[in-house]
Image (cartoon, rainbow, N blue to C red; front, side, top):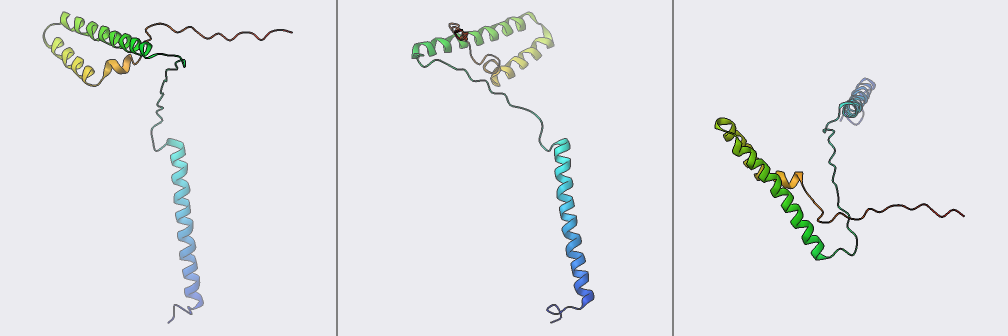
Length: 132
């Protein structure tokens, strides 16, 4: 049972191995964090989400009018694209039609025109505080 009472040389060798591996693992971790902070593991893309803010007294009829205005604007955009495609001929028309089909399938109009207000809201203007 020499592992319970190792010689001085064995104990020193074990301490050097354990200490060296601890330093190596710590160094690898620190270098990994430094490299990640420098170049980044994940991309530096930001997702910006716009939210529409409505007043508390917005009725269902207002919401439906806004929805209809949005759909109408999207249909106008698609109609403009179809009208342009109709002016093309040959391979250009085939390519443009394929691109248009992919655009519609991918929800392109909904992404480009996500919301249109039927009636422009009145802007809120901050008033000057009264001068006393």
